[in-house]
Each structure stands twice: as C-alpha cells, then as structure tokens.
Amino acid sequence: MFIVLLTLLPLFIPSVSAQEDCPINYGCNNTNIPNSEVEIYCGKHDTNMTGRCCIFKNTIIGLDLRYCDVKILNISQPAFSQIEILDLRDNEYEKVTTHEFINLLKLNFLYLPQHIPCPGGHFSWNITNKDHNMTSCIEQLNPCLSLNISCGDAKNAECHHLGPGTAKCICSPGYFGYKCLNNGGFPVDIFTCSVIVPTIVLSVALWFIQGRDAYRKQS
Ligand SMILES: *[C@@H]1O[C@H](CO)[C@@H](O)[C@H](O)[C@H]1NC(C)=O
Ligand SMILES: *[C@@H]1O[C@H](CO)[C@@H](O)[C@H](O)[C@H]1NC(C)=O
Ligand SMILES: *[C@@H]1O[C@H](CO)[C@@H](O)[C@H](O)[C@H]1NC(C)=O
Ligand SMILES: *[C@@H]1O[C@H](CO)[C@@H](O)[C@H](O)[C@H]1NC(C)=O
Ligand SMILES: *[C@@H]1O[C@H](CO)[C@@H](O)[C@H](O)[C@H]1NC(C)=O
Ligand SMILES: *[C@@H]1O[C@H](CO)[C@@H](O)[C@H](O)[C@H]1NC(C)=O
Image 1 (cartoon, rainbow, N blue to C red):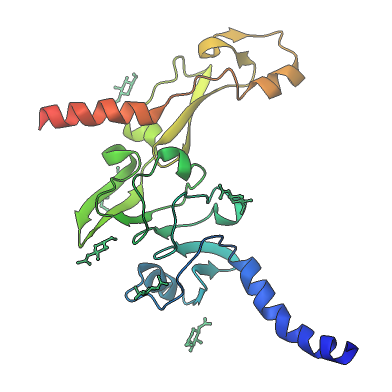
Image 2: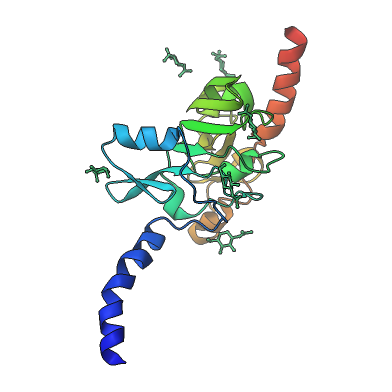
C-alpha cells in the first residue's frame, strides 16, 4: 500500500501544481480552442499555455475563458491581477460591469461577445471595435486623464485609476471628509481607516452613461 502511494505521489504532484498555477473555477470545455488570441499573445512572449492561462515568468498574463460557461465573472483574485489579455467570448453573458474588472490595471486586450459593449465605453479604451463576431477593447485608458476628472483642489485629493472605467478621488494625507475639505488635527489611526469611506467615490460608470448619451446626441 505504502509503495503504491509513494509511486503514485510523483505522478500527482505535477497535475496538482498545474491546477494551482492556473486556478480557474469555471466549468471549461477543454477542447482545443481554434485561433486563440491568448495563445498567440503567449507565443509572442515565447511561452506556452498552462491550461487556460498564459504564464510568463511565474505571472499569469493571459486568460482564455472561451467555452467556460462563465455566468459570473469572478477574477478579482490576486492571482489574476496582472493579466494583460482576457478572452470572454463564447459564454452565456448578458452584460459586464466595470466593477467586475477592478484591479485589472494591466488589461489591454479584452474580447467579449459582440452584443456586449466594452466596460467603461469609449473613454476607457483607446480602441473599441465590433467586428469579426466580437467586441474588442484594446489599450486601457486612465479615466482620470481621458475624462479629465477633477477631484476639487489638487492639493486635497487626487484621482486614482482603479481599473477599466473606474477611478476614485482619494484624499491626500492630512485631508478628510466631504470633498477632502477638512484638514489638520486628525488622529492618524482614524485617518487611515477613514481614507476609503469618506472619499468621494466617483461612479465613473454613471459618468459614462451620461457621457455616452451626450456622445450619441452629438453624432
Ligand atoms: C465543447 O466545445 C466544442 C467546440 O466548440 C463543441 O463542439 C462541444 O459540443 C462542446 N462540448 C460541451 C460538453 O459543451
Ligand atoms: C512550447 O511548446 C512547444 C510544442 O510543444 C515546444 O516545442 C516549446 O519548447 C514550448 N516552449 C516553451 C517555452 O515551453
Ligand atoms: C470567486 O472566487 C473565489 C476564489 O476562487 C471563490 O472562493 C468564490 O467562491 C467565488 N465566488 C463565486 C460567486 O463564484
Ligand atoms: C458568434 O458568436 C456567438 C457567441 O459567441 C456564437 O454562438 C456564434 O456561433 C458566432 N458566430 C459565428 C459566425 O462565428
Ligand atoms: C491611442 O493609440 C494611438 C496609436 O497607437 C496613439 O497614438 C494615441 O496616443 C493613443 N491614445 C491615447 C489616449 O493613449
Ligand atoms: C481639465 O480640467 C482642468 C480643470 O477643470 C482644466 O483647467 C483643463 O483645461 C482641462 N483639460 C482638458 C484637456 O480638458
């Protein structure tokens, strides 16, 4: 019994680590996907796919989730925070929200089913295309710059890019409260836990809805 376990052990280790290297919790249909954009991207980095992941220098830089039965996108795990390319086509998706892409600051190639628009719209990507039966969102933009977001007085608060179509005004150290207008005499420990809560959260998603409508009216 012992010997059997010992001889099986080395066989198990590679498959276990492959699973850990590419921790995908979707019911992927593991057929070979023809013309995988992620695989091509991976090839340009001189590396091969590990399951549905492209891993370059121990970092997951690409994810191919076609035919993975994705209904809820749940990739805000640290393991995926460095992805540069993501393919979500061929899933029963109705829409995506900017919230689902928070932290994906390096995402520069996003492929979606054609009926789904790019998260954040034109202001969040340099190129948004609908052809070849897909929506392509290429080269992520920083909404702080593309929308020229002002956080009030520049010395009190600063705009931070959080992901495609998401930005937030964060108070500078020493400033707090509504529009970061209060300053001084604020205990440091309270300040640090209050940083997130009383900052002015700019729902850029809403800006986009307004922005897009304005855009349509113009055109
Ligand atoms: C897996 O994908 C292939 C290729 O698209 C398709 O022909 C097959 O029916 C799929 N299998 C399942 C179980 O979804
Ligand atoms: C990728 O896979 C091909 C074919 O299996 C192999 O020849 C090549 O050495 C692999 N490249 C790397 C970087 O592992
Ligand atoms: C999202 O992923 C995490 C980590 O893999 C998992 O623990 C959690 O159950 C998932 N949530 C949903 C709604 O799938
Ligand atoms: C277009 O994409 C949809 C969903 O991703 C797929 O069901 C359909 O077969 C595709 N059509 C063509 C012509 O590739
Ligand atoms: C968009 O891409 C073009 C061509 O690569 C580049 O010249 C331009 O500066 C980019 N725009 C932004 C806002 O990054
Ligand atoms: C951005 O906003 C600032 C302050 O509101 C303004 O002075 C500046 O002209 C704007 N820049 C652009 C390119 O719209």
